[in-house]
Length: 373
Image (cartoon, rainbow, N blue to C red; front, side, top):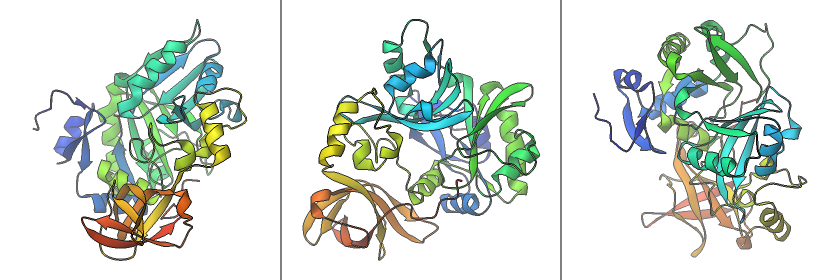
């Protein structure tokens, strides 16, 4: 048994991860499994069959009461008016200067209820920020400990959920991307949504903590039958990087705006009110000083975050994420590059990898084609 660090929280499934021989690391204030059988094996299983992830460190915040959806819509960047109850939406919580406090998924239950899933380290802060300005009658409730979040990702993910019985029988009709349904497991409500963070067809399940172990066991058994594996945060990171998906704290953050990070699709530019609106409109109008790109290594070497990117001998940016791509068998990175450098897709730059220049091609992510829809 591993000894829990006193300052780290653990998933309700921690004992299951220990039994599987997981290695753990701190992440967002939690002690979470990084890998079981190995990051590359878990990554490949997710791409080719199915991976089962415990992502219970993610936040869970319920906003409820008369006008709850309209209230949230006045605060966050995307437009809940674009979707209907039963749909989820990617959105951003921004500061007044346009920096990204957090990126999160909203589940629109109805006009009087929105369920938010922020990132682990930011969950309490986002909840407090919403609660501080909530109108009378609207409550913001932190439900972090009440639920687990399990991600079932990969080509066989639908077959797994159907076999376990948490995906309602709809014949050959699948859930639309970003749609959710409320199902049951052991007479408890489980929310099933066509979302994920891997670039693969997949689902995320929000379930009561009381049924976490039995639900995990049932899913893990069928995942194994389908040729899949339990997967840790190591594979989640390589998968999301291949898919070009940003990680808050690296590719998004208080110093990195949606315009710079190329996530302006999550900003409803014509909406009259949201936090950071004026700063973001001004930045979009004048153009950002830097912009996100992908970099694909031409030679041997693995980029990591915070490495200098050069055009010739001139620094033109910095990597924000970097890893070895198990699918492409080469190094890849996400980077913020100076717009003044005039770089475009296909240009060659270099990354300073511990004093050695690693040549890379500028590309538009994703590095690996997405299969989410």
